[in-house]
Image (cartoon, rainbow over all chains, first blue to last red; front, side, top):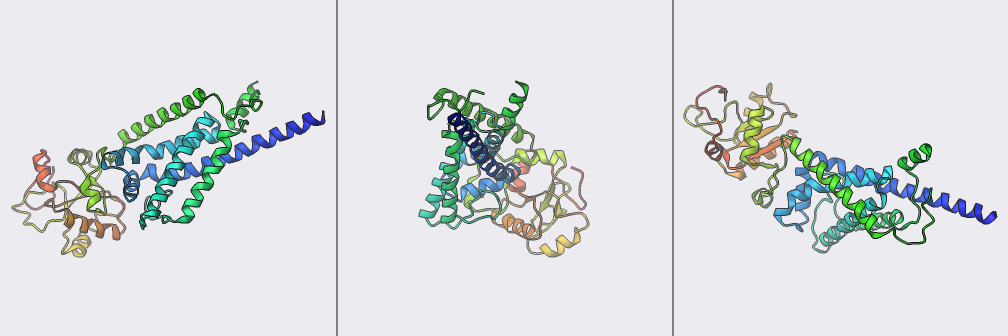
Length: 160
Length: 170
């Protein structure tokens, strides 16, 4: 009986931790996506400044990535295809981390383009640390055994 | 509720990839829909000129510019120092030249507001148009675009032109 209660408490805690991580990552991605969806030209310029993508990929990338961020964010927050969303969030964050790292190595004095297409945070070590921290948070919903609380799950629970 | 009892570190790979593929497909649909609906949509092919010259404003190709002209949603600005009685210009375009920018802008300040979307054109000297675009941006104009190819390309593409005083009527 005591074991079952402990297990139940662990499970509840696990579900909440996953939910909060999804909320944090989803909120970050949603906020990051809005400015870029509104101003794809500005985002394309920010991406160009990293000097990583060939010209032929620049605009398709600038048009697709913000929407991917938004879709992943909503999926994480609502709990729809959550692990798939976490996988995509991980892939994007790894890409951002590599891009920032490459910019630092090449000493590029550029804006991140993460949240604002015009100005915004400069590429620096703190940005790299932030991206790595985000990577670790994303691993929680991706690798956890728990599904995590979500609106979708709440509706399913009420319907059952 | 059955989740949370699995001992596997990751759910079956196929489900994970299916979910990711579903989200990617939704992303593509939303991106295409959003791109199609915008009148000032970003061209799919990046202009190397725009980025190599580090233009302060996005470059519009002729198709886009013609569409925006027909929609009447954007105001055209002629940055050339020309004789309007002899040289062709886009009907309705405001003449705001680099050398007399402040005076010219003041003269049309009752008609041209910072929130108005502008398309600047010249004789295909991008440096000159870029300089004027920068000045507009400094003055708080937020939606400034540059017509790629200038007036000559506009005419070759069949865009309407007018000669003489007045705004013309397209």
